[in-house]
Image (cartoon, rainbow, N blue to C red; front, side, top):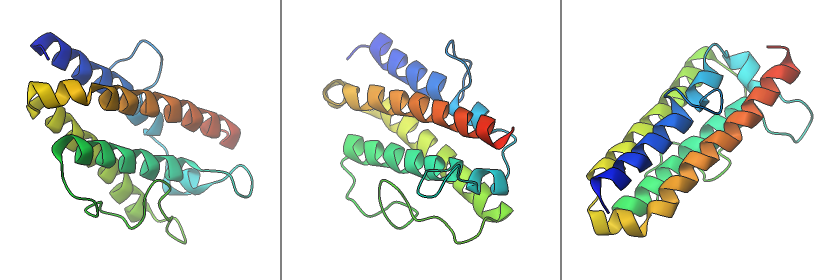
Length: 151
């Protein structure tokens, strides 16, 4: 894998999560200004909320990091996988902590992509593309939930 290809992977990840993007809001941008109560709101029973998507994306960034680095399962900061159990009630502190978990998961994966040996990164490049697409997809859902909420 060339430096240009690695830089492209990093750029795609950043554009989906927190850098200026051609497609509209990034995940971090979509979450800016959302408070705990707004993130906890569900449009209907059994439907996902913004908080669900934050934890879900944090988990899959962790999962991609684990696969890229060869780290054993079980080291994610929250209990569960894929759709993580929500706190029973929204609090500002819990919301800030989970936003920080998402940011930390992104940084950790980004560092792993930047540091991975070329052969491993080449073999796992689809994984990195997938994380970026996953962020963009769920960002769209977050934007829809914000609109439904009235934000």
